[in-house]
Image 1 (cartoon, rainbow, N blue to C red):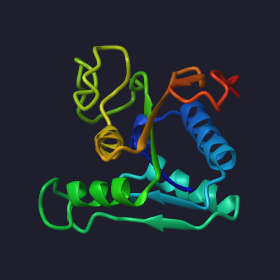
Image 2: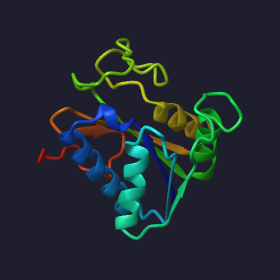
Image 3: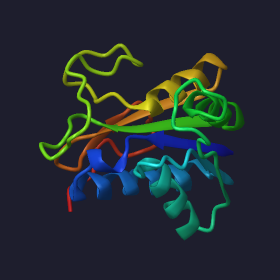
Image 4: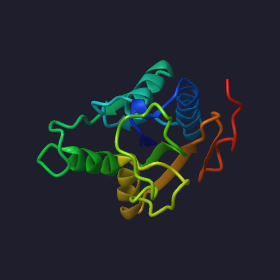
Length: 167
């Protein structure tokens, strides 16, 4: 099974939420029996990089689609890269956060994720959500896992435990 793992950039995570995200990634790879992990090698790090690192630790082959240009719709940009991930994966999992840490200096979207049409407080906007939605539009499974500030998480997959203790 080819598992695409995408989500939020590194600066949106705290130490606690990064540990939780890495644990979720590891659980997904193991429980889905992934024989290939696909991600996007974001220049901002985060889920894309952690997915590859955790797959490497488990001995699972990986494939990365790095954007060649840091623009959405330009040839070789994020849109093209995200479509490749959605097309190549059997399942795409997006890992995002319920809220941004106070230290985050980037753009904030107080109305929630416009890719998922959620309201405030559900989860922060992530380009990974666009990729997950693109996979769903192709009839594939798209999963959203939301990490809470305390390291617990929730999502629409029943093979993972609903909550993990922070550590």
